[in-house]
Amino acid sequence: MRLWSFLKRNHLFLSAIIIGLVQFLLYVPHMGDQYTNMRHVHGSSSFWTNVAQNMHEIGLEKAFFGGVYKAERDSQGEIVYWEYYNSHPQLLPLTYAGWTNVFGYDEWVPRLFAGLIAALTTALLFFVLARLFGFIYSLVASLFIIATPILYAFGDKLDQEQFIALFFVLS
Image (tube, rainbow, N blue to C red; front, side, top):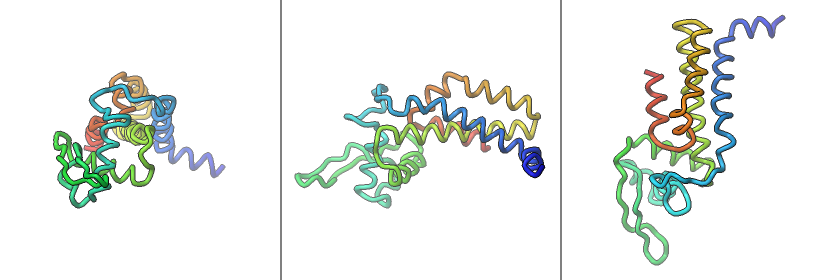
């Protein structure tokens, strides 16, 4: 009886978690795929992974003004010159540098980060719509969001689009 009471009181929260989980599980089979988008590939890893590695090497205090790319190294492999990548908001490289500090630089790490942000966005959208318009409307809208090809296309690569969608929902 207590479980039923808990589920009845918190059904929106639990439903939002389930919706976010469904969104995330759609990305899991593609986490280990090789990078094919040449705009985000630098050598053998993603552009943002290289940026995060460079930011860690020079220190986040020097990398505060943007992602560090085009790093030139001396004969010992130390970075002696770099350029800032300021075409994107600074939140993305700084947040991702912190993420890679925890999870490392494997190929699945940026996709895990992007997939979690997409899942969080969908879950928050479900929760907000449920509070405003009711459960059924939010469920249908969330299923449409999950099936949206553009969200799926941008959901498994790390770029600013996931943050834009998340902050749009938060606003």
